[in-house]
Length: 413
Image 1: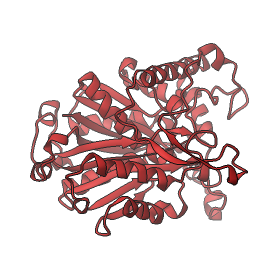
Image 2: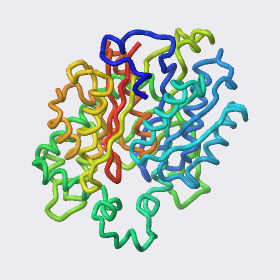
Image 3: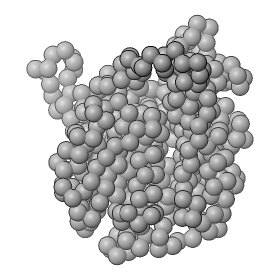
Image 4: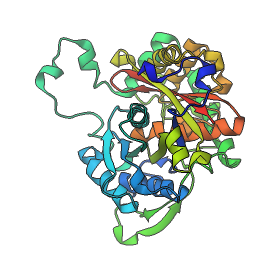
């Protein structure tokens, strides 16, 4: 793919007919699994909301021009492909629009966006949608870690193979211990995430990226006859009153005498996201050039030891910067998924980032981490924040379960 990327900030900022560009990027509210406003919604129901909003945003776009939809999802029944395809048809995409899902664990949404970008870059398609969906309310638990495995894997002599099913909380503890991230620093980072997200929500920074979802709600999940219709309009995991002192009182969640708690780890959440993508020349031909909000400028993925999977961004980001010819100091904003405060802090420190440029509107500790949708959520947040701050270059990155990191470079138009 190196031939499709014009290396260096000067070249990447240039506008070329073959550029892969974003016309819109939406997300649903991200809500608390089993407790939040979307707990009774289906993953494909949330997907339908962002796909419908995409069509409504571009009324002059013939839906048949959208050739493929790729959606990241981790825990869905049958990989989400059947219900997701049904949802796309339901909201107005014709049968000629193809659909498929992708699972790269926590990077699934970003992998979907990258997959559509690659298809456009090589000329396989002209217009596509990349995004993600996840109902952790409905599917989290036994689907997250397989309960049945090939015996040879369970007893594999290869430690990395066995470690692929290590609980994510335990990997967080490993990172904290190995790289010297204290409990106090984790709690302080988590408190800042909550405070930044609360401020962003209060000031309306998320309004352009969020699509309201009208869905069914049961005040008592066990009493279906009391079901009512509600419209969910905002993230509900943000806790504005969070303080370091309150976080310090929370017990370790994964290991006795550990440092990772429910308060300094990402929230288990529900949500969906979708981004409409095309080639710049196609946008001009379809009369949509005025809708261009950003450009995809490259993605990279890298593997690491499964038992410290959280270090993934510290490895993927340098690989991305080298691949695109961009220096760290040229990046104006960073969206680093906060799977755990331990790993996010380690990556920030390892790369020498200016923390003021990282997750200015909070991250997954405050907003939540709906696995397959997170990459799409980060994209929607980044694009709109880049516009607000008038920043030209931004990076999305996350660690990935089983030991990986992924990163993408985004350019503001």
